[in-house]
Image 1 (cartoon, rainbow, N blue to C red):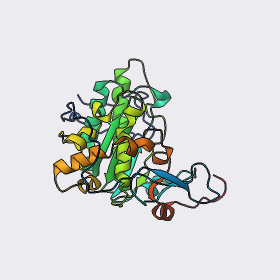
Image 2: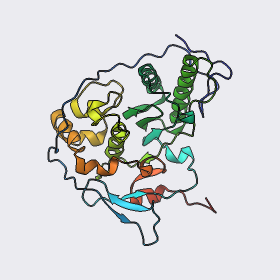
Image 3: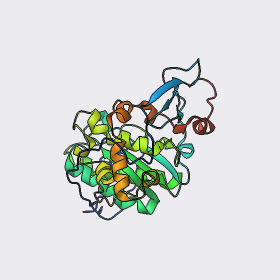
Image 4: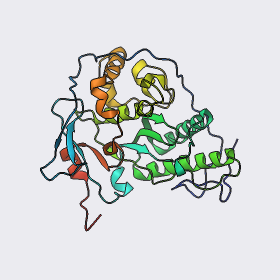
Length: 303
């Protein structure tokens, strides 16, 4: 059924003034019960227990470098800085971690129909806007998605405007008498350093996979239906996903890669990811210290 916007009915924080016509083709894919996670990978990498150290003697509580599961790899996480323009966060071919919160923390994505419809919108509009979906996890109040903007910032922004706008229209029609805003805040989209030895993209993907575990909804990511974990860990088909190159580098065969991905969820490797991590969501850039410093705009005056 085509969705026609009604004045005052549809509202997403940065939604477009008009919506595309035509029915949203429902995303398909198989989600089945997975096997228990393995305790170790396939030997193609040498994970270590994460550790942290200050960037400098004057570092604040959110200024730190850590080694996130890979020996000797320095990661940087910025302190609070003025909001970075989207054009500096999203570049041609950049990898970004995208998430937003619902208005008043409403459970807009709680129901199965809501999750299915949101994923169907992503599947419908991603190809036309040059968006590759690397991973996702849908929670009741927010989505987590790692995407690649193959056509740059303008198409990236248009993609999220139409997806969020059409979802807002659908949700407000579903909830009788509801009008107005569905997305509460400006969408966060920190850029992730790709193709690094430290596998930063895989770190953010694992953080998303562990969302329902942190929320106490399931004991393990394999038990949650609405994420890409079971695609990567068990090879379940998911037409929404284009495999992440860092994942493909985990082994020579699909079986090796799946076992290695499961191994990345060994308890000692995800201890730092089982708590809320503003450094993976709130900042503008996530990656090696030098890479982040080159991209972080200097603040002029007080933040």
